[in-house]
Amino acid sequence: ELARAGLAAGVAVREALATSAPWGDERRLCLKWPNDIVLRDGRKLAGLLLEAESGPRPIAVLGIGANLGHAEADFPDEIRGLASSVRMETGVSPEPGAVATVILDRLAMWLSIMEVGGFGPVREAFMAVAWPELGDRIEVRDGHEIVLGSFQGIDMSGALLLAGDGGTRGVAY
Image (cartoon, rainbow, N blue to C red):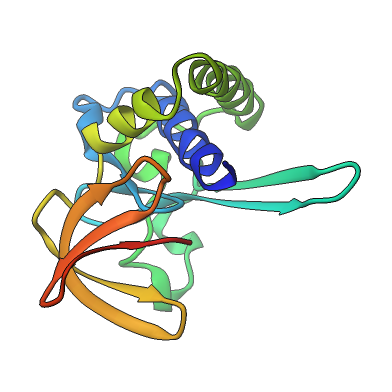
């Protein structure tokens, strides 16, 4: 359930960023499994980290980092070509509190949708803006192993589906 909630959070953050500035074509903002919001060219705008602890009082903590008002010079040299910000892409630096409010609203909405309708609607929303696109060749770390294959989507558990020489396999995070 945690993996699916993490993907719902990604959909919520992507939607919040899409509404935070005039993107022109918001399809430029994509979701990279399992936890990044990237531009269509792969540069990273935001990332999520979901941690949980089970027990008598289970808890989950969601951390979100989003590049809102950064200029290119704000990024260290080693990641300058790998990252971007809302400001760099749109010329607008959204107010962090306003973006956080939209993220919380969208997260509540997607978790409610998931509670009522299952993971299907979240999976569909994720796949509509997934990067890479279906069939693209990718490299994924599965435990200590690097696996090459073509991206086939995500399954109903939230695992990435990767087609390779041995058939299609799910890669969980």
